[in-house]
Image (cartoon, rainbow, N blue to C red; front, side, top):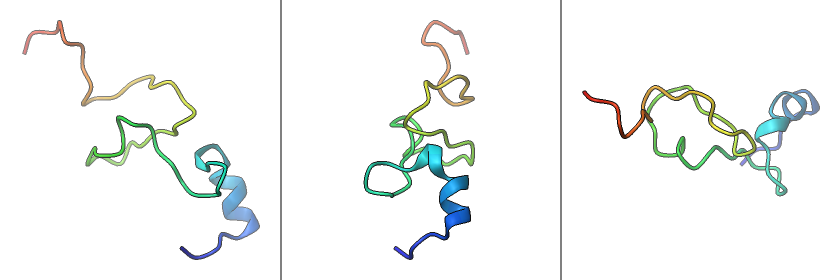
Length: 56
């Protein structure tokens, strides 16, 4: 993986793990959508992960 510039590191800081690699939330890893969330965040809203009680 190429090294990030200082500007890129500041922009991606919330997504970087202790090794300096971008890491997404467990639910977002295999998702095809572009709405990826950081592993540090509690998933606030995800169109794919609906309630199990919701009727389709």
